[in-house]
Image (cartoon, rainbow, N blue to C red; front, side, top):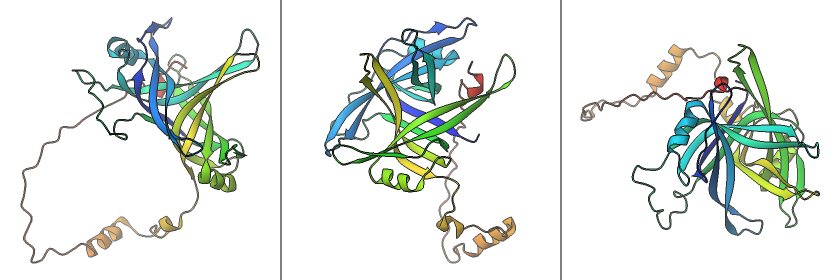
Amino acid sequence: MYSYNRVQIIGYQTQPVEVRQTPTGTSVTDLNLVVPYVFRSENGEMLQGKGFHTVTIWGAMADVAGQYLKAGAQVFISGRMQTDSWDDQTSGEKRSKTKVVAMDMILLDPKDGQHPAPEGAKEIGGSVNRVDIIGNCTRDPEMRTTTSGQQVLTIGVATNDRWKDKASGEDKERSEFHNVVIWGDLATEVNLHIKKGHRLFVSGRVQTRSWEAKDGSKRYTTEVIAETVRLLGVKNAAASESVSASASPVQREASQESVAPTTEGVAPAPTEEPVAVPSVEYASEIKVEDLPF
């Protein structure tokens, strides 16, 4: 795998789940999750908002959602971002929509129902909206300045998914192109040092915003609001100090033993009965190579 595209969401299902069947008998459903969040406005004021995310679930996981996931229930989703494109039948214009294709799902509500939110717990009572991508920068940064004087920058990052087609056995590949928005001092640094073709790690949150087009129709765009950007494949002075190309495993072990603290004259620590920790084996029901596209 030479790129990475993962989204993690903890949100609330906004409507009853309806499971559909494909012509081949595969179950599929679309969740509509609302994720409340707190953000800082351009003038520094802390405001509350909420984002809505479409999540597509396939196979047995879709059947579980249809049976157990109710409107208002809290759920964890881990998956990947995918943008579908099509031609508008009326205008002929190219349209697109970004969604999350689920790879893991965990229902979070207790058996006795949701508990009241603790008062004053602004952090632990919140939701989760996190996206991590590793890919190549597809265009040079574009810097703009808002009316309030803030620096905002946009870049594109491409990721790739590979899987084996079940029907034909052929290796398939799909590219995703992510719009990344960067604010403040981070935007200034990215603008100075990152160019088209650079390999990047980007971490942040997914945001979908809407606007009204000239023809009066409502349009949407989905972006990654970056909190962290890392330029990859570059040397690091601090790491280089700890790297040796000549030390063998035996030499490293000897080096570690030579600096180990002595226990001479120190009473041994009391022994405790070992605690049996059960092993947990977990595998996602849905893998990229199992998806029918």
